[in-house]
Image (cartoon, rainbow, N blue to C red; front, side):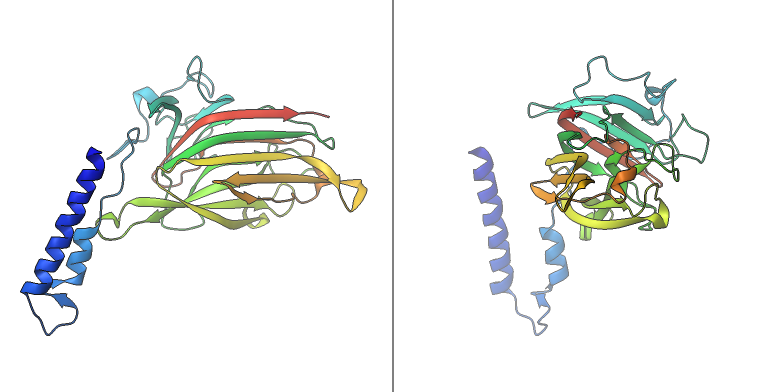
Length: 308
């Protein structure tokens, strides 16, 4: 009740200010109200972007003492709330957790240049969790569910190098080509900036699917498809299932699929060259930051594996 009363009072005060300006002042300039420009009025109306309770703010350094880790798995919590095995390749921070409104969130923070596990200038920083792998038989699949919040993602000023991955489907294949542990479909968040007092703030994020066009594809061997936009710090549900099923048009063939549901919107996709696929697996967390910092939160995570 107190919050509602406060909001009503705030709205009433704003309305009184508008009517006072309008009725007490006149002007021949249609773009102003009694000497107060429309631009000024819009600026007054804007609210600062939200700062999450578990958000890192301000300046930062690439590496920190509390982000040091001897190996990729050495600094996980004893009983993490998030499922999966940690793959920590950042010296900016180690995995932590926060509890907000009764929900415990896994904290995944990375910065540009902070990969302290791989050779310099080779692989991107990441703090992800890997999950069990399913075989390529028809009816086999892996399924991951969870809720995420995005607070910040990498930005270089160029679309091709900006954005950070929140989750990805992976799986090896026959016939060679590409990485020894190739990505198949990655879900990439790009920053959306505000206006006025929020002009330099990330206020929302466009979620893209970065999909291979051929097995082992990278660079021009992938397509980037816009899926949807989510607001900063918005709790968004996420479901991803990767597996093999029978081709309904030819029972002698199979389909390798990667289907996602993001915030109750469904995005289904069939992976190219299904007969070459040998496994299905999923990773999630925070991955890739070529400029700046990325901050992703995950809660209510579950994983299911079915082998036929």
